[in-house]
Image (cartoon, rainbow, N blue to C red; front, side, top):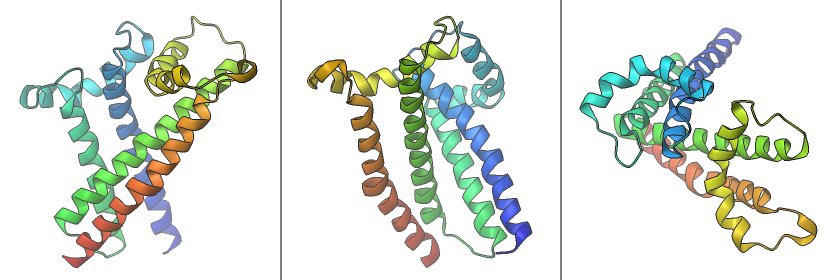
Length: 192
């Protein structure tokens, strides 16, 4: 791989990663019913509405899950993978590319949740103004993962081990679910 090709791959990863991050974050905040009037939510809606509103007419939401947003994030992941593989002269089959894009999106969401849980842990150690618009969103996004474990685990000495177990579970999901899915997609993509 040449230097320019590697630089182009970094730029593609970054540009598509920002778009996917914004879309996925909007979808996740809708799922947890975040406060619409939060400035961060307002920003996300303004930035993603031009992409999602046309899709919303075609693909309805169901129980706070915006399937149009998920489809769009998956489509951007597929475009990213197609661009990167084409740049290096490899052709991919559509079925394999679809599976690889699904695995890439799932991995993105899992890594995002590792970051969210890590930020939540950091917020518990430092004093941060609760009026900061990011703080309630971090708590709302992480609570569905942490609450079930927190209610079942003892807290010896007041220590909460649920973030550590959630991160461990996410790492296992990446190794046992996402990695085999990527491998299956690669086999299908290269067989075509």
